[in-house]
Image (cartoon, rainbow, N blue to C red):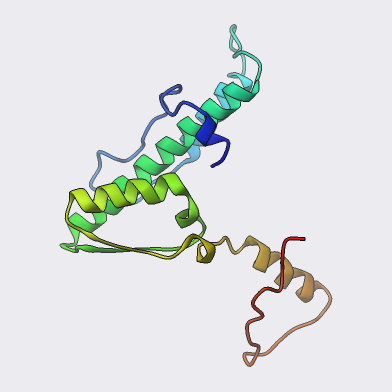
Length: 157
C-alpha cells in the first residue's frame, strides 16, 4: 500500500474481471498474470518491458491496487443490491488497506448504504497466527478447546 501511494493508478489498464456479470464470484488470477507480464515481460515476446525502477514498481503497485479495489467494491455493491440489503460489514486483512476503505466509504455513501468496518489495528491477516500454530503442532504441542487468547503474543521489536 505504501509503494502504491507513490504510483499512478492509471498507468497500467488492468482488467476488472467479472464486474459486468450478475455472479458475485471473482478471480484475480488473470490480474496477477497481467502484472507479472508487465513486470517481467510476456514469454516469447519480441519486445520486453523496461527495467523495474522504483517508479515503475510504484505504478504497477498502484494500478494493481486500483484494479483489486474496483472489483472488491463493485462486488460488495452488487451483493447488497442483489440481496436488498443496505448494511455492509467488512473485516480481515484486506480491510486494513486505505484505498479499499476509502472506496468503500465513497460507494456506501453514494448508495445510502451503512458501512461497518473495524479499526485498522483489528484488520489483520491470520498468516502469523497460522505460522505460530504450525510450529506448535510440529513440536507436538497441542491444545484442547480450553485454550485462551494471548493478545500481544507477537510484537514488533
